[in-house]
Image 1: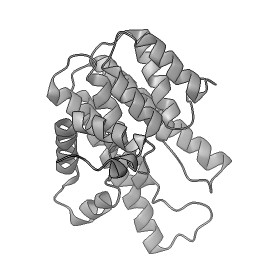
Image 2 (image 1 turned 45 degrees about the vertical axis):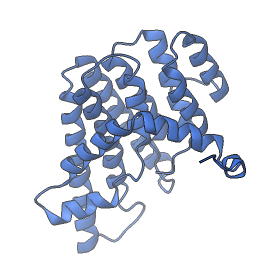
Image 3 (image 1 turned 180 degrees about the vertical axis):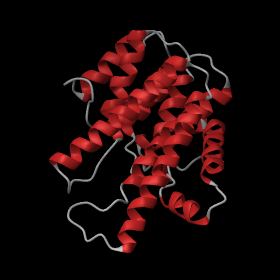
Length: 244
């Protein structure tokens, strides 16, 4: 059956790019979601309920890690575990966002909410760290630990300087997603840095430099002329803006 050209014209370029990359990573993404579901299904109903509230509908951080790690060679289990680890790190921060801010009356319900948010968030952190460690790659574990330290620093800074402002981990985790994926498969340092910078710009705030988004992608593309496998990821980063 010949496609209706009028319908095809209504499909945005961003949707095509996104569907192409997600089709390429489809089986891996399904495995990542399975791992996250396994790690968030506990014997404790209250914990399960809290974790279900922050379960991501989309997996942009995992897509960056999987897309980056496809540029080299690594066991599927390691790539999936690492992608799940990055998403669980984001979930941990999301759980901690349940903690009330500003001046609050410490009632019994508030005390329970604060305590449970801290503990459940820490559970996510521990699961994320366990998944990263399962790759058996010291460089990956070190980069993952550094990302956690950056998240902590940014959150404390936000609480001190702008306590009413919502916390965002996007730039840090998008950059970390590219970094750990690149380290896992041993990509050259210049390419690793370019991928990290482009991924950070995807989070709308560059974490390491004042480079503009346009410059970040020009740098990446100049380094990847001989790497056709980078193009789907680069195009996805350029066009897709996740909401979760």
